[in-house]
Length: 118
Image (cartoon, rainbow, N blue to C red; front, top):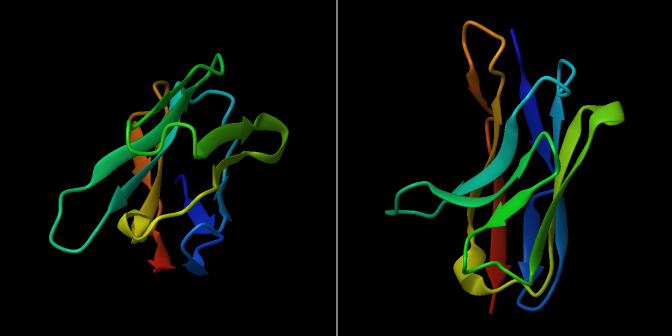
């Protein structure tokens, strides 16, 4: 059973920074995609950023230039560095991983709250 555990959320003022971490209970080398999604109250879950096995990245337009996703295969961890935070970034952030070699391919973390005050 794969477990993803997020950490690093919290309360920050607008313009501040946070770094989210997502630690996997297994090696992430076999994942094809790992990413971060977020869900604000009353809204649908949306993609924030994702990174492929080859290191290619994609970002939501709303976070381009402010957020950076990275993965450390040796630590089985994916990170989301968030700079220039805005109140509209307030949401629960979820880690996602896709393991194409497993019977159950998609996994989600429990989420970590990010709150940005104005």
